Image (cartoon, rainbow, N blue to C red; front, side, top):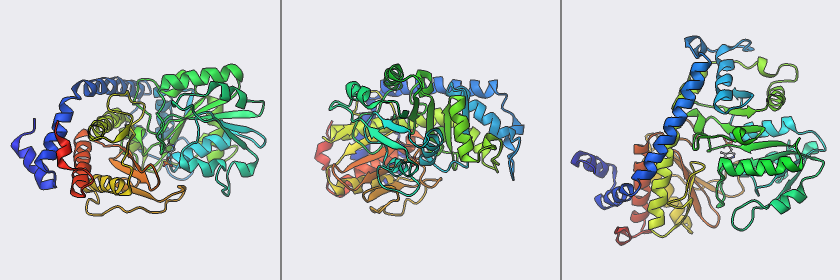
Length: 434
Ligand SMILES: *Cc1c(COP(=O)(O)O)cnc(C)c1O
Protein backbone atom coordinates (compact mmCIF):
# COMPACT_ATOMS: atom_id res chain seq x y z
CA UNK A 1 0.00 0.00 0.00
CA UNK A 2 2.96 2.37 0.42
CA UNK A 3 5.00 3.49 -2.58
CA UNK A 4 8.75 2.85 -2.72
CA UNK A 5 9.44 6.48 -1.81
CA UNK A 6 7.25 6.24 1.26
CA UNK A 7 8.90 2.99 2.30
CA UNK A 8 12.29 4.58 1.83
CA UNK A 9 11.52 7.59 4.00
CA UNK A 10 10.17 5.30 6.74
CA UNK A 11 13.49 3.47 6.54
CA UNK A 12 15.40 6.74 6.80
CA UNK A 13 13.36 7.60 9.89
CA UNK A 14 14.42 4.29 11.45
CA UNK A 15 11.45 2.00 10.75
CA UNK A 16 12.45 -1.41 9.41
CA UNK A 17 10.50 -2.80 6.49
CA UNK A 18 9.14 -5.76 8.52
CA UNK A 19 7.67 -3.33 11.07
CA UNK A 20 6.07 -1.19 8.36
CA UNK A 21 4.64 -4.21 6.55
CA UNK A 22 3.22 -5.59 9.79
CA UNK A 23 1.62 -2.23 10.56
CA UNK A 24 0.16 -1.97 7.07
CA UNK A 25 -1.41 -5.41 7.31
CA UNK A 26 -3.06 -4.39 10.58
CA UNK A 27 -4.36 -1.18 8.94
CA UNK A 28 -5.86 -3.25 6.10
CA UNK A 29 -8.11 -4.88 8.67
CA UNK A 30 -9.28 -1.53 10.09
CA UNK A 31 -10.83 0.06 6.98
CA UNK A 32 -14.42 -0.15 8.25
CA UNK A 33 -13.58 1.24 11.68
CA UNK A 34 -11.72 4.14 10.12
CA UNK A 35 -14.65 4.87 7.87
CA UNK A 36 -17.01 5.04 10.88
CA UNK A 37 -14.62 7.46 12.57
CA UNK A 38 -14.63 9.66 9.46
CA UNK A 39 -18.45 9.66 9.54
CA UNK A 40 -18.50 10.89 13.13
CA UNK A 41 -15.88 13.52 12.30
CA UNK A 42 -18.03 14.71 9.41
CA UNK A 43 -21.05 15.09 11.67
CA UNK A 44 -19.07 16.92 14.35
CA UNK A 45 -17.34 19.15 11.80
CA UNK A 46 -20.74 20.24 10.51
CA UNK A 47 -21.97 20.78 14.07
CA UNK A 48 -19.03 23.13 14.71
CA UNK A 49 -19.47 25.04 11.45
CA UNK A 50 -23.20 25.40 12.05
CA UNK A 51 -22.60 26.85 15.52
CA UNK A 52 -20.05 29.31 14.17
CA UNK A 53 -22.42 30.39 11.42
CA UNK A 54 -25.34 30.81 13.81
CA UNK A 55 -23.17 32.99 16.07
CA UNK A 56 -22.07 35.02 13.04
CA UNK A 57 -18.38 34.51 13.75
CA UNK A 58 -16.50 37.20 11.91
CA UNK A 59 -13.21 38.98 11.50
CA UNK A 60 -14.07 41.38 14.32
CA UNK A 61 -13.95 38.47 16.76
CA UNK A 62 -10.26 37.85 16.21
CA UNK A 63 -8.81 41.10 17.51
CA UNK A 64 -8.58 40.39 21.24
CA UNK A 65 -8.60 42.73 24.20
CA UNK A 66 -6.23 43.93 26.91
CA UNK A 67 -6.55 45.24 30.46
CA UNK A 68 -9.92 44.44 32.03
CA UNK A 69 -11.18 42.95 28.80
CA UNK A 70 -14.63 44.55 28.99
CA UNK A 71 -16.85 43.86 25.97
CA UNK A 72 -14.45 41.37 24.44
CA UNK A 73 -16.68 40.30 21.56
CA UNK A 74 -14.39 37.52 20.40
CA UNK A 75 -14.34 35.93 23.84
CA UNK A 76 -18.07 36.31 24.44
CA UNK A 77 -19.00 34.96 21.02
CA UNK A 78 -16.66 32.00 21.42
CA UNK A 79 -18.48 31.17 24.64
CA UNK A 80 -21.76 31.25 22.72
CA UNK A 81 -20.27 28.92 20.10
CA UNK A 82 -19.18 26.47 22.80
CA UNK A 83 -22.60 26.62 24.42
CA UNK A 84 -24.25 25.76 21.08
CA UNK A 85 -21.89 22.91 20.24
CA UNK A 86 -22.28 21.35 23.68
CA UNK A 87 -26.05 22.12 23.77
CA UNK A 88 -25.55 24.05 27.00
CA UNK A 89 -27.21 27.17 28.41
CA UNK A 90 -23.90 28.90 28.91
CA UNK A 91 -20.14 28.46 28.72
CA UNK A 92 -16.96 29.76 30.28
CA UNK A 93 -14.00 29.38 27.88
CA UNK A 94 -10.94 31.26 29.03
CA UNK A 95 -7.19 31.47 28.68
CA UNK A 96 -7.18 32.35 32.41
CA UNK A 97 -8.20 28.74 33.09
CA UNK A 98 -4.71 27.28 33.08
CA UNK A 99 -5.42 23.58 32.49
CA UNK A 100 -7.97 20.80 32.90
CA UNK A 101 -7.33 20.36 36.60
CA UNK A 102 -7.88 24.08 37.10
CA UNK A 103 -11.16 23.97 35.17
CA UNK A 104 -12.37 21.04 37.29
CA UNK A 105 -11.22 22.66 40.53
CA UNK A 106 -13.05 25.81 39.49
CA UNK A 107 -16.28 24.02 38.64
CA UNK A 108 -16.21 22.14 41.93
CA UNK A 109 -15.06 24.85 44.32
CA UNK A 110 -17.48 27.41 42.89
CA UNK A 111 -20.53 25.17 43.19
CA UNK A 112 -19.78 23.66 46.61
CA UNK A 113 -20.09 25.36 49.99
CA UNK A 114 -18.81 24.39 53.46
CA UNK A 115 -20.83 21.46 54.77
CA UNK A 116 -21.65 20.13 51.30
CA UNK A 117 -20.55 16.72 50.11
CA UNK A 118 -19.03 15.74 46.79
CA UNK A 119 -19.65 12.22 45.53
CA UNK A 120 -17.77 10.26 42.88
CA UNK A 121 -19.94 7.31 41.89
CA UNK A 122 -17.31 6.02 39.46
CA UNK A 123 -14.40 5.23 41.77
CA UNK A 124 -11.22 7.20 42.22
CA UNK A 125 -11.00 10.38 40.15
CA UNK A 126 -8.00 11.50 38.08
CA UNK A 127 -4.77 11.72 40.09
CA UNK A 128 -4.53 15.51 40.16
CA UNK A 129 -8.06 15.78 41.58
CA UNK A 130 -6.94 13.97 44.74
CA UNK A 131 -5.23 17.19 45.82
CA UNK A 132 -8.15 19.34 44.70
CA UNK A 133 -10.64 17.32 46.71
CA UNK A 134 -8.28 16.66 49.60
CA UNK A 135 -8.24 12.86 49.27
CA UNK A 136 -4.52 13.51 49.54
CA UNK A 137 -3.97 16.17 52.24
CA UNK A 138 -3.29 19.36 50.35
CA UNK A 139 -3.23 23.10 51.11
CA UNK A 140 -6.26 24.83 49.62
CA UNK A 141 -8.19 21.60 49.01
CA UNK A 142 -11.97 21.37 49.21
CA UNK A 143 -11.50 19.40 52.44
CA UNK A 144 -9.85 22.44 54.04
CA UNK A 145 -12.97 24.46 53.20
CA UNK A 146 -15.19 21.92 54.93
CA UNK A 147 -16.41 20.05 51.86
CA UNK A 148 -16.58 16.32 52.52
CA UNK A 149 -16.05 13.63 49.92
CA UNK A 150 -17.35 10.17 49.31
CA UNK A 151 -16.72 7.68 46.56
CA UNK A 152 -18.42 4.53 45.35
CA UNK A 153 -16.25 2.02 43.55
CA UNK A 154 -17.25 0.55 40.23
CA UNK A 155 -18.30 -3.09 40.22
CA UNK A 156 -15.82 -5.79 39.18
CA UNK A 157 -16.99 -5.60 35.56
CA UNK A 158 -16.53 -1.83 35.40
CA UNK A 159 -20.25 -0.98 35.63
CA UNK A 160 -21.96 1.33 38.13
CA UNK A 161 -22.80 0.05 41.61
CA UNK A 162 -26.34 1.47 41.65
CA UNK A 163 -27.09 -0.06 45.04
CA UNK A 164 -23.98 1.53 46.58
CA UNK A 165 -24.61 4.87 44.86
CA UNK A 166 -28.13 5.02 46.24
CA UNK A 167 -26.81 4.46 49.76
CA UNK A 168 -24.12 7.12 49.34
CA UNK A 169 -26.49 9.94 48.40
CA UNK A 170 -27.90 11.91 51.33
CA UNK A 171 -29.09 15.43 52.09
CA UNK A 172 -25.58 16.91 52.06
CA UNK A 173 -24.71 15.51 48.65
CA UNK A 174 -24.46 18.61 46.48
CA UNK A 175 -22.26 17.74 43.51
CA UNK A 176 -21.59 14.47 41.74
CA UNK A 177 -18.44 14.14 39.68
CA UNK A 178 -18.35 11.66 36.82
CA UNK A 179 -15.13 11.11 34.93
CA UNK A 180 -15.85 10.07 31.34
CA UNK A 181 -12.36 8.91 30.47
CA UNK A 182 -10.42 6.23 32.29
CA UNK A 183 -7.46 8.54 32.92
CA UNK A 184 -4.59 6.60 34.50
CA UNK A 185 -6.74 3.61 35.33
CA UNK A 186 -7.45 0.35 33.62
CA UNK A 187 -11.23 0.60 33.89
CA UNK A 188 -13.32 1.19 30.77
CA UNK A 189 -14.23 4.73 29.73
CA UNK A 190 -17.93 5.52 29.75
CA UNK A 191 -20.08 6.31 26.76
CA UNK A 192 -22.17 9.47 26.90
CA UNK A 193 -25.26 7.24 26.96
CA UNK A 194 -23.97 5.35 30.01
CA UNK A 195 -23.25 8.64 31.73
CA UNK A 196 -26.82 9.71 30.92
CA UNK A 197 -28.20 6.60 32.60
CA UNK A 198 -26.15 7.27 35.71
CA UNK A 199 -27.30 10.92 35.81
CA UNK A 200 -30.97 9.91 35.45
CA UNK A 201 -30.59 7.43 38.28
CA UNK A 202 -28.96 9.98 40.57
CA UNK A 203 -31.48 12.73 39.73
CA UNK A 204 -34.34 10.39 40.56
CA UNK A 205 -32.91 10.02 44.05
CA UNK A 206 -31.99 13.70 44.45
CA UNK A 207 -33.26 16.01 41.69
CA UNK A 208 -31.31 19.10 42.81
CA UNK A 209 -27.90 17.43 42.86
CA UNK A 210 -25.41 19.02 40.42
CA UNK A 211 -23.93 16.47 38.03
CA UNK A 212 -20.53 17.44 36.69
CA UNK A 213 -18.77 15.43 33.99
CA UNK A 214 -15.00 15.52 33.65
CA UNK A 215 -15.07 15.54 29.86
CA UNK A 216 -11.28 15.50 29.32
CA UNK A 217 -10.34 13.51 26.21
CA UNK A 218 -13.98 12.78 25.38
CA UNK A 219 -14.97 15.78 23.23
CA UNK A 220 -16.01 14.96 19.64
CA UNK A 221 -15.38 11.23 20.02
CA UNK A 222 -19.12 10.65 19.85
CA UNK A 223 -21.93 12.65 18.29
CA UNK A 224 -23.44 13.67 21.60
CA UNK A 225 -21.88 15.32 24.64
CA UNK A 226 -22.70 15.01 28.36
CA UNK A 227 -24.97 18.06 28.69
CA UNK A 228 -27.32 16.44 26.16
CA UNK A 229 -27.89 13.54 28.54
CA UNK A 230 -28.55 15.69 31.60
CA UNK A 231 -25.16 16.81 32.93
CA UNK A 232 -25.32 20.19 34.65
CA UNK A 233 -21.68 20.88 33.78
CA UNK A 234 -19.10 19.38 31.44
CA UNK A 235 -15.51 20.42 31.95
CA UNK A 236 -12.31 20.07 29.97
CA UNK A 237 -8.97 21.35 28.80
CA UNK A 238 -8.20 23.27 25.62
CA UNK A 239 -4.82 21.60 25.24
CA UNK A 240 -6.76 18.39 24.74
CA UNK A 241 -9.52 17.66 22.20
CA UNK A 242 -11.48 20.93 21.82
CA UNK A 243 -8.35 23.06 21.31
CA UNK A 244 -7.58 21.03 18.21
CA UNK A 245 -3.85 21.31 18.90
CA UNK A 246 -3.86 25.04 18.21
CA UNK A 247 -5.04 26.52 21.51
CA UNK A 248 -1.87 27.26 23.50
CA UNK A 249 -3.66 27.31 26.90
CA UNK A 250 -7.14 27.27 28.36
CA UNK A 251 -10.02 25.38 29.83
CA UNK A 252 -13.79 25.35 29.51
CA UNK A 253 -16.92 24.73 31.51
CA UNK A 254 -20.24 24.36 29.72
CA UNK A 255 -23.62 23.78 31.32
CA UNK A 256 -26.45 25.34 33.32
CA UNK A 257 -26.42 29.11 33.50
CA UNK A 258 -26.45 29.09 37.31
CA UNK A 259 -23.44 26.76 37.51
CA UNK A 260 -21.42 28.76 34.97
CA UNK A 261 -22.22 31.97 36.82
CA UNK A 262 -20.82 30.50 40.04
CA UNK A 263 -17.69 29.40 38.19
CA UNK A 264 -17.24 32.84 36.62
CA UNK A 265 -17.50 34.59 39.99
CA UNK A 266 -14.91 32.23 41.37
CA UNK A 267 -12.56 32.56 38.38
CA UNK A 268 -12.51 36.34 38.47
CA UNK A 269 -14.29 37.83 41.45
CA UNK A 270 -17.72 38.07 43.02
CA UNK A 271 -19.46 40.96 41.27
CA UNK A 272 -17.26 40.74 38.16
CA UNK A 273 -17.83 37.25 36.79
CA UNK A 274 -17.70 36.88 33.01
CA UNK A 275 -17.44 40.62 32.37
CA UNK A 276 -13.66 40.76 32.83
CA UNK A 277 -10.77 38.70 31.51
CA UNK A 278 -8.82 40.03 28.54
CA UNK A 279 -8.28 37.46 25.82
CA UNK A 280 -4.97 39.05 24.75
CA UNK A 281 -3.99 37.44 21.45
CA UNK A 282 -5.11 33.84 21.88
CA UNK A 283 -8.74 33.90 20.78
CA UNK A 284 -8.13 33.22 17.07
CA UNK A 285 -6.32 30.00 18.01
CA UNK A 286 -9.32 28.97 20.15
CA UNK A 287 -11.64 29.40 17.16
CA UNK A 288 -9.30 27.72 14.68
CA UNK A 289 -8.51 24.89 17.08
CA UNK A 290 -12.19 24.27 17.75
CA UNK A 291 -12.82 24.24 14.01
CA UNK A 292 -10.14 21.57 13.52
CA UNK A 293 -10.95 19.58 16.64
CA UNK A 294 -13.34 17.02 15.08
CA UNK A 295 -10.80 15.87 12.49
CA UNK A 296 -7.90 16.01 14.94
CA UNK A 297 -9.90 13.80 17.30
CA UNK A 298 -10.55 11.42 14.38
CA UNK A 299 -6.79 11.19 13.71
CA UNK A 300 -6.16 10.44 17.36
CA UNK A 301 -8.84 7.76 17.39
CA UNK A 302 -7.36 6.05 14.36
CA UNK A 303 -3.98 6.05 16.09
CA UNK A 304 -5.48 4.61 19.27
CA UNK A 305 -7.26 1.84 17.38
CA UNK A 306 -4.15 1.06 15.35
CA UNK A 307 -2.09 0.78 18.56
CA UNK A 308 -4.74 -1.38 20.23
CA UNK A 309 -4.76 -3.82 17.35
CA UNK A 310 -0.98 -4.02 17.06
CA UNK A 311 -0.34 -4.63 20.74
CA UNK A 312 -3.31 -6.91 21.20
CA UNK A 313 -2.02 -9.02 18.35
CA UNK A 314 1.37 -9.15 20.06
CA UNK A 315 -0.24 -10.54 23.21
CA UNK A 316 -0.47 -7.50 25.49
CA UNK A 317 -3.52 -6.48 27.43
CA UNK A 318 -4.99 -3.35 25.85
CA UNK A 319 -7.86 -1.16 27.03
CA UNK A 320 -10.03 -0.60 25.05
CA UNK A 321 -9.42 -3.79 23.11
CA UNK A 322 -8.96 -3.86 19.35
CA UNK A 323 -12.65 -4.11 18.47
CA UNK A 324 -14.44 -2.13 21.21
CA UNK A 325 -16.25 1.12 20.51
CA UNK A 326 -14.47 4.27 21.67
CA UNK A 327 -15.51 6.86 24.24
CA UNK A 328 -12.25 8.79 24.54
CA UNK A 329 -8.94 9.07 22.71
CA UNK A 330 -6.83 7.25 25.33
CA UNK A 331 -5.32 3.87 24.67
CA UNK A 332 -3.83 1.87 27.52
CA UNK A 333 -1.33 -0.89 26.83
CA UNK A 334 -0.09 -2.95 29.74
CA UNK A 335 3.50 -4.00 29.24
CA UNK A 336 3.97 -5.40 32.75
CA UNK A 337 7.56 -4.18 32.96
CA UNK A 338 9.26 -0.78 33.30
CA UNK A 339 11.40 -1.63 30.24
CA UNK A 340 8.32 -2.03 28.05
CA UNK A 341 6.82 1.28 29.21
CA UNK A 342 10.09 3.13 28.67
CA UNK A 343 10.76 1.65 25.22
CA UNK A 344 7.24 2.53 24.06
CA UNK A 345 7.62 6.13 25.25
CA UNK A 346 11.05 6.43 23.61
CA UNK A 347 9.45 5.47 20.32
CA UNK A 348 6.72 8.09 20.59
CA UNK A 349 9.34 10.71 21.42
CA UNK A 350 11.61 9.67 18.55
CA UNK A 351 8.74 10.10 16.06
CA UNK A 352 7.92 13.68 17.11
CA UNK A 353 8.36 16.81 15.02
CA UNK A 354 9.74 18.62 18.09
CA UNK A 355 12.39 17.32 20.52
CA UNK A 356 12.76 13.99 18.71
CA UNK A 357 16.41 13.88 19.81
CA UNK A 358 15.73 13.68 23.55
CA UNK A 359 15.22 10.49 25.56
CA UNK A 360 12.35 10.59 28.06
CA UNK A 361 13.09 9.28 31.58
CA UNK A 362 10.76 8.63 34.54
CA UNK A 363 10.44 11.64 36.88
CA UNK A 364 8.49 12.97 39.86
CA UNK A 365 5.54 15.05 38.67
CA UNK A 366 3.49 17.50 40.76
CA UNK A 367 0.12 15.98 41.56
CA UNK A 368 1.11 12.37 40.82
CA UNK A 369 1.93 9.79 43.48
CA UNK A 370 4.60 7.84 41.57
CA UNK A 371 7.28 8.69 39.06
CA UNK A 372 5.88 9.20 35.57
CA UNK A 373 7.57 8.84 32.20
CA UNK A 374 6.21 11.22 29.59
CA UNK A 375 6.87 11.30 25.88
CA UNK A 376 5.82 14.42 24.09
CA UNK A 377 7.41 16.26 21.27
CA UNK A 378 4.73 18.87 21.18
CA UNK A 379 4.36 22.37 19.78
CA UNK A 380 2.39 23.27 22.91
CA UNK A 381 4.07 22.21 26.14
CA UNK A 382 2.37 19.16 27.66
CA UNK A 383 -0.35 19.15 25.02
CA UNK A 384 -1.83 15.70 24.99
CA UNK A 385 -3.98 16.13 21.89
CA UNK A 386 -0.60 16.04 20.20
CA UNK A 387 0.90 12.55 19.97
CA UNK A 388 2.00 11.73 23.49
CA UNK A 389 2.37 8.88 25.93
CA UNK A 390 2.75 8.64 29.64
CA UNK A 391 3.19 5.86 32.07
CA UNK A 392 3.20 5.96 35.85
CA UNK A 393 6.13 3.83 37.03
CA UNK A 394 4.07 1.45 39.12
CA UNK A 395 2.35 -1.88 38.50
CA UNK A 396 0.72 -2.91 36.24
CA UNK A 397 3.23 -0.89 34.16
CA UNK A 398 0.72 0.35 31.67
CA UNK A 399 1.37 3.09 29.19
CA UNK A 400 -1.37 5.58 28.32
CA UNK A 401 -1.12 6.78 24.82
CA UNK A 402 -3.14 9.54 23.16
CA UNK A 403 -3.35 12.21 20.53
CA UNK A 404 -1.99 12.78 17.10
CA UNK A 405 -2.82 15.94 15.19
CA UNK A 406 -2.65 13.89 12.02
CA UNK A 407 -3.23 10.19 11.46
CA UNK A 408 0.01 9.96 9.49
CA UNK A 409 1.98 11.15 12.50
CA UNK A 410 0.11 8.82 14.84
CA UNK A 411 0.97 5.92 12.53
CA UNK A 412 4.66 6.83 12.53
CA UNK A 413 4.69 7.16 16.33
CA UNK A 414 3.16 3.75 16.88
CA UNK A 415 5.46 2.09 14.36
CA UNK A 416 8.40 3.76 16.09
CA UNK A 417 7.24 2.49 19.49
CA UNK A 418 7.15 -1.01 18.04
CA UNK A 419 10.58 -0.54 16.52
CA UNK A 420 12.02 0.51 19.92
CA UNK A 421 10.43 -2.50 21.63
CA UNK A 422 12.10 -4.71 19.03
CA UNK A 423 15.43 -2.90 19.33
CA UNK A 424 15.33 -3.39 23.12
CA UNK A 425 14.34 -7.03 22.65
CA UNK A 426 11.09 -6.67 24.57
CA UNK A 427 9.34 -7.97 21.43
CA UNK A 428 10.85 -10.32 18.86
CA UNK A 429 10.32 -9.96 15.13
CA UNK A 430 9.07 -13.54 14.94
CA UNK A 431 5.91 -12.38 16.81
CA UNK A 432 4.95 -10.13 13.90
CA UNK A 433 3.76 -12.74 11.44
CA UNK A 434 0.19 -12.10 10.36
C1 LIG B 1 -5.97 15.46 31.64
C2 LIG B 1 -7.07 15.14 32.55
C3 LIG B 1 -7.33 15.94 33.66
C4 LIG B 1 -6.45 17.09 34.07
O1 LIG B 1 -6.13 17.96 33.05
P1 LIG B 1 -4.76 18.77 33.06
O2 LIG B 1 -4.91 19.68 31.91
O3 LIG B 1 -3.66 17.78 32.88
O4 LIG B 1 -4.65 19.48 34.35
C5 LIG B 1 -8.42 15.60 34.43
N1 LIG B 1 -9.17 14.54 34.16
C6 LIG B 1 -8.93 13.73 33.12
C7 LIG B 1 -9.82 12.56 32.86
C8 LIG B 1 -7.88 14.02 32.28
O5 LIG B 1 -7.65 13.24 31.24
